[in-house]
Length: 406
Image 1 (cartoon, rainbow, N blue to C red):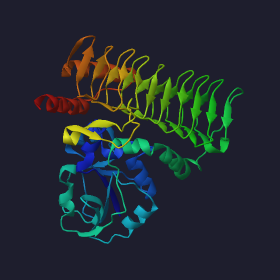
Image 2: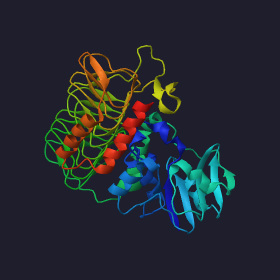
Image 3: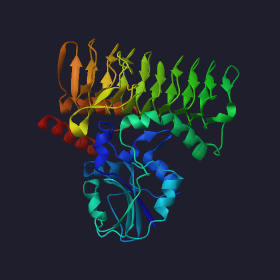
């Protein structure tokens, strides 16, 4: 039996983070959505249907995956946005051939033999046009970025119990390190804990993944996940509901925030209730507000409607797309959405909606030229011994063109 994870038309609900990645690669808790689904079904092979705009970059990065390619055999298709659990799993596994699970206008899962060998998320519904519909209104999908943030503490705990609890635990600490509730702590191979670190897992697990470094006098209060190769800087305060992906450098005060990976917030300053993509760099003493002064629910810019919508949440920080940066002493207002490829330096409040490829330097503001963006992106990735590949250049060039053609 083949399993295929597919994105659907609601990928744009998660812009700007999904401008450059599949919906299935959104992180919540410890895992990405796709990883959690595959883990539930104990599937090792990765088969995905994604947007045609992302196809080349995914084929380049994941040469062992089947990307937008199908085989003429019985296949279970699973929406990457589903909130997978045992009930959902059982509903999917009891599907008969040529049946699909549906909740209102969302196809949750389907079982069929695909007629075509190639597909993409733009025309995914054509695969399921003649299937018998089974309505499952109680089975839900993720709808918005802020929903992921709100549930992050729950999912860190859930992933810890499902995935990490029985893994080999390299629980070794030096004198001067304080661990509260050690049975709720998982430490990977190669983790470094410096003198004065306090790990408090009283209210939820703390997972320090392989080769991460926690520097002196840092306080980590679970539920928290620190990804592989990430560094938490001296004196940092990492509060509950924070997931930090691989190869990040994080300092200052952070709470209920998700870092996809490869991003830096090295210095003092507050970051809360926020979602950051990859290759984001926040300058020294960058702070964000996560609560309006009038204590009302926050509105944010919503790409599908090209307008602001009410999130029905009081605590909303900022959402920042890949390769965006802030300068020293930047201040970001509550509910601010920053697109990809932005460079924001200045004393003015960063407020509400910053489209992709914008720059602010002092009193000057304007459009970030593509050549300049690529030049900086190449230098940034080179510092991490990586390259800004040809398919990346094509993807960002396409997005840049879309931004300025519109």
